[in-house]
Image (cartoon, helix red, strand yellow):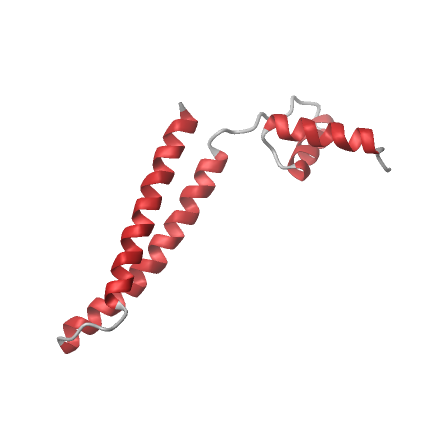
Length: 109
């Protein structure tokens, strides 16, 4: 079944109002009809959780690099050229993580 441009625009607008991606909105709406239930409301924390998961992954990657550079420093007594850069990156990523936590708090209020 095809939808008209007007219907497509109405679907997109409804998805935007709900805070869902268009595909997720259409799927959830269709499933709610099939399962004879009310559609789920957009969960306001979903975006915040996604952001925090991404930040967690960044912290992990930076931590691995920083740990390797520190291990080299401890083993050789000389810092690698990358150590200072890894430390700056760790600081920047942790600041972004703090911003993400603050954003999550705002969204959950």
